Amino acid sequence: MASSSRFGGILPIVAIVFGSALLGFAGGWAWQATGAGRGATETIVRDYILDHPEILPEAMQRLQQREMQARLAPLRGAIENPYPGAVLGNPNGKIVLVEFSDYACPYCRLSVPEVEALIAANKDLKVVVREEAVISPDSDDAARMALAAADQGRYAAFHKAMFAKDQVVPATIDAAASEAGLDLAKAKADIASGKYEVEIQNNQRIAEAIGFTGTPSWVIGNEALSGAQSRDALAAAIARASAGK
Image: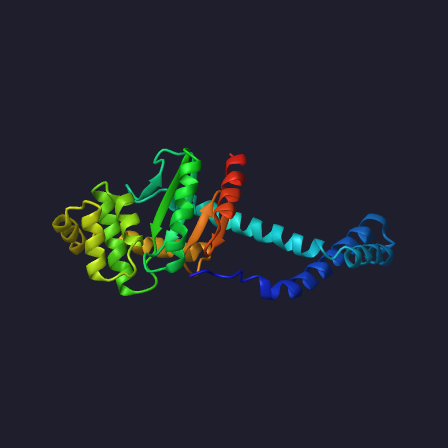
């Protein structure tokens, strides 16, 4: 379920506030520095903003990026450390792409070939998939089976088989598990034990702490992206993360 930016609707208001704050700051600085000329300084700053209004969205973008970096920093370990085995690509890769995913999400299904292409193009890419069951009760069942598959070393196979199904229902979950080579009896016993509930609930808490409201959602380095992303957009974010290391 793709999510739109929650900042877009308030950008004009924030721009006005930002501009006013900038005027006040500049004027105050001039007053303290020289004791005079406040009005002239405010006029200069005001005229510059009016002549270059494009700086306001850019400034807001910078502010949003800094806020997101501050939000991600204390969660870094929780976000990037996978449930054991719930990884695609290179499990020892130094570049980490995190995807919050739901098997009942059509946009997550559309993202599968994009992620596969990124993995094929970057041998150092580790894709951490966080099972976030948000769409239906069957999403939870599929997420539990995925974690059972991770325990059996069959996560990637189940992930691909499950997303190849047209719908997420008990029959297709069992079919995907069988196709992935799981010991189905053991998987169901593990699921019945309740051992995967903490992981699924934890993924939801992490997503909420980041500010995600749907799937797929992504974390790459200091960036968080919501909704379906093109291969090029993800590749660009991966390149920025790689450059920042």
